[in-house]
Structures are given as C-alpha cells and as structure tokens.
Length: 172
Image 1 (cartoon, rainbow, N blue to C red):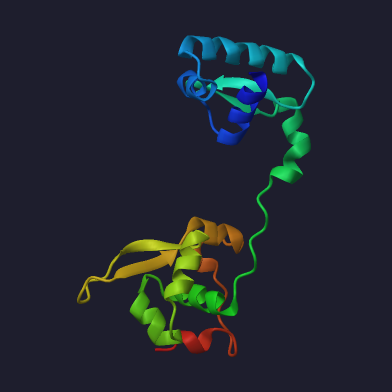
Image 2 (tube, rainbow, N blue to C red):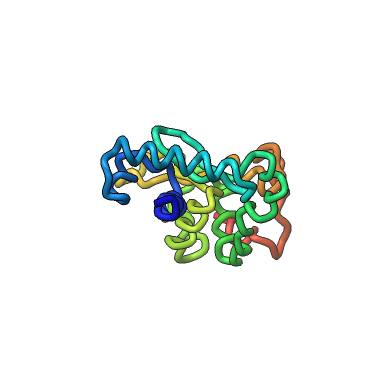
C-alpha cells in the first residue's frame, strides 16, 4: 500500500486528501488516513531527500527545507527564448506610445495580433483601459515586469530613439 500512496502523491503534484487516497486504495477514508500517516512516518524517518507534509487538508511530497537551497539551480524556470524582432518592434511601439490600441500598433508596423498575445503571456504588456474611439478598443501599456526586465525605474528612463532604431515606427 505504501508504494501506491507514494505513487498517488507523486502523480498528483498537489495535496491529496484522505478521501482521494481512499478512492485510490479502495479502503474506507479512516483507513486511508491511517495508512497515509504510517507512510509519512516511514518516509520522514528515512533519509531519501523528500518527505510527506500534511497541508491544505491533504498529504503531499515535498523536499525538506534544508535541501532546497542546494536544489535552486534545478528549480529555476528555464530562460525564455529571446523576443523576435517583430515582438521588440511591437513592444517599442507600446512602450513609447502607450496607451495605444491594437489598430494604432498595426497602423505603425503591420500585423501584431499574435505578437501582442506573446507579450501579454510574458507579462511585458497588459490592457490598461479602453479608448473612447468607436467600438471602445482596448488600450495596451507596459507592466512593472517590463521595467524590471529592461532595468528601468520608470518609463521616463526610456532612452531616446535614434535614427535607424524603432523611430521609423513611431512617426505619426
């Protein structure tokens, strides 16, 4: 039964309640709770690098706190791929002209629908309101994460654009 409890906790990746374990183990809930407690005692007494924690009304597998600092390089999210030149162009338009509508962005550089979604997924831009124009289109602006990733304290620190950079996109 311990193997099945361990497999259930590992597979779930979240706290598993005694009732859920009872369903997996096909035993009454009280018996599942007793079996989980026994599994926790056995596992927590072994030096295996993980243990059972009772949290949020359930059981879950965790790495002991004394080991987490050593595992930090493995736990860091993988770096995101660099932004494409199209994404950087759209980001520049939004950063320098915000708040700006999708139509205004497309008028300056062409298609941008997928690029705006990518920038939103990366939390570099967000919807900041609605325009008073016909149809009340969404207005886009940059986020705190944009400032952090580009090392800016505020938008006032955006560097002036020289010729040959994105300045051709911002005329008009």
